[in-house]
Image (cartoon, one colour):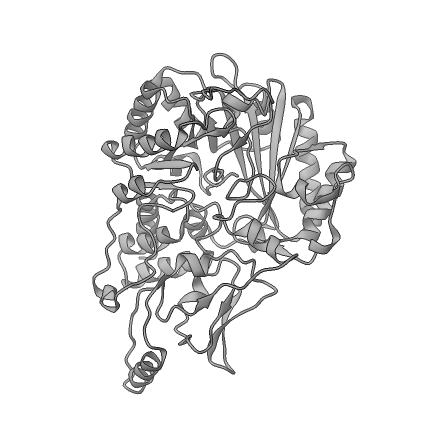
Length: 225
Length: 283
């Protein structure tokens, strides 16, 4: 799947969007992979990720299936990275999202030194990933380019909405919810941070970038003034 | 998916979170209702909405009182206050909607969650795309538009006529009744999906031909398309073969997924086959 690949935006808009993810291949390097993937997630925490997640359980901010009614006035929007690490109980893709190139580079260097044998990918601008590999001193193995959205593009919403909704490549962040959050931020009904947290909870594998979403929502608010 | 009308209080939160816009407030019964034709069984409503378990009668009464007083309660937008969503028991062929739309459900054909495909992210251990080859992922319906199988069928027929080889370990290929002609089982033609990916692999020399073929397909299908193009880098980590072709065709390469080459075969009993399947969801 190409969940992190086809985010809408130009290279500049990915300057605060670096996803480093690890994956095991059945029959090749999956023996002992559960512990390695869990270690990968745990290693990311000191480098200051903005999201952390796995494809089975979700990210660091998840929906609650038994909310207390008073939560409307006291919603917790803090990511729980430890819960992601401790809840990792199935071999699946593990991802760490950073909003800083330096943090992503440092984490990637640490992963390289850990030498776990997992396949590790970086999803960001072409140059951004190349730079991470350069800093770590390793040549890129393969690259998968995104060519952007084509076909009946008249069916797509406006660019601000797309910037937000395409941060979940599985389509779990609805265009209509993204538009609603932009409108609410413009109306002052929610802060950009709060609005980003609502969107983040719908991403089921933890690759949504709440920091980039906050910046996009702030830009949208600014453009309406 | 079903919304229990005894529980629903028509707050309208769910109408915004449905990626397909398939949920609406029915003015006759005054409850949220799902358009089953448009619903792709992605479970974004059921999995993504937080839930309260409030008494529906009390909530409706409060809403009426608020309405009389011209007051508006400003609830959290990602909550179903009465936990009204109830999953259906899906049967064939409708079950394929969920398989292609709910990212938490692994595809039976590949064992992979998400859209069930591979591409180059494990290429360092699988050699799925070799030097001199290009792997295409042609995804229909993304982002947030959806696609009917009948449109995917058109694309598969066109690609098959061009003599491409469909990736074996791919959910679309697994639904083909005749792979050489790209013919998909007829009983799924009436099913709508969030998105689906056709995977093919060709020699680098056919890159431009395939891109132009996809451009032609785009005119014939009623949805959006997004192309992913995967290839190997050289020993220095450079990729100066495919990128120039794509740029010549007018593309600006903003984003990519880069396999860093850290993977290696570590299993004690090494698999001699060249066909690997990543474990868990694909990114």
